[in-house]
Length: 191
Length: 191
DNA sequence: TTCATTTCTTGCCATAAGGCAAGGTGGGCA
DNA sequence: TGCCCACCTTGCCTTATGGCAAGAAATGAA
Image (cartoon, rainbow over all chains, first blue to last red; front, side, top):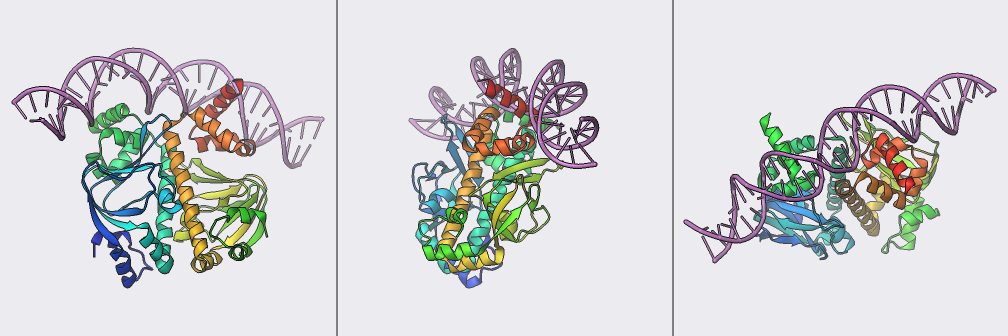
């Protein structure tokens, strides 16, 4: 049984036998660097638990500008919640910034587990709650923190992203231009 | 049966008998202007469907500055998802900007319904998905749109907020100072 | 190895938004 | 009626970040 999945589905209420059933619903897949897990316009039919590598999620704004909405690393879940659960075409795209090893679960299998294992539904709700919280935090940080502070926070919390993602994608994630990020990085390294 | 609740719980899969059971789990409450639905530090034990009036949610940042994270109006749900579902102390506070009439549902009653009515769990997941989507959209808009544009969007989508909330709270919601919002408002009215 | 492409840095100047402080306005309450 | 206080506006100057463009550095493919 994958330790990645055990980590992802760790929850006080989920019993070992349930955990086994959940993990067995996943299959191992590998995405070469650059490949898409999901493209905008498609309807998601699965999500992935990431074992290794880095995934980037992004949207195109009304000008066609590519805005990074998040990074997904090992032990985390790559999912387009809206497309998967509301059965609509994705607005977001997800692609592999490096080679990615992941565990895929089908929407149908997920549905079966969600409605047959009460603790799994609890886990799902807790996961969604946490995601919502992180997005709120991010919005607040966009308001209260300077770009430099947001960069330092990212460096502290997810140093691997700075090493694996190109600067322009980190910049749009932080809400600034690549030019500004380059300068910020210089200032920070001087200190 | 409250039309407000019928509107909130509208979902293609929920059957009329289920809808009745869900609505009956709520009780009507009234908050005078200024009163708190939830204060940071408390653990949420319920959420509210808003029938009339306007609720503001906010957090205090590390400097103690009050940042508006959202407004909740009629036909919407006032809830601190993290506090309620993870059973932890709230970081967010929610208070009534006007007199508010709402329908309250207890966490325990909610849990019973969530685990006994499959379509209610589906509804909950869809609701969470939508919230997540809206928060992502908000983050993207903070990055790609000017403050003026965000103000115009708010005016178009939620004009009632501009009429009922004081300027300083709208300003922190838009991610700017009240000074800037005052100037933006002047420029906009000139056109 | 070479070449092309992408990625990153830097300089110059423009602009949106903030900080501060003074003053105006209006609603609620004694 | 008059006063107080929260709310809003405005002026002056500062500052963070953006836009553009040139060029340097790194990467990857043939």
